[in-house]
Length: 138
Image 1 (cartoon, helix red, strand yellow):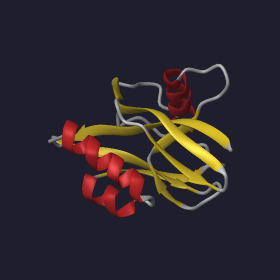
Image 2: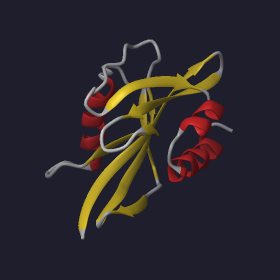
Image 3: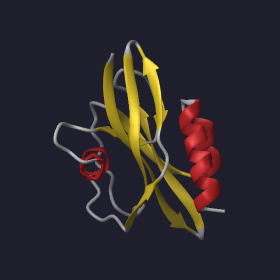
């Protein structure tokens, strides 16, 4: 069985004393809304993958902070085991223009927690998000 190692991140900013979260409209291989995630390339550490993914997925040049989270998960699709080996909480700025990888995502949005939970396509990402939200933003 093929194994793909990945990192994932919840990207957020604070507006009017409330958190807003960045989600992506995926168009490559499947369609729907997702959090930021990136495949670890050979020779990269998970942290290096996160930095590359943030650059490729958002184009952000300014990141306020990055916090490593002790959350991992995995799933299997078509004889491929996908493993999230590191998760992160990334404080970015909503004021910075987003530059998407248009082959993978058609758009992105900064939205509230409730809107995010309605839009996310996969239940496991909703569960991950809710766990982080309870521990960080409450």
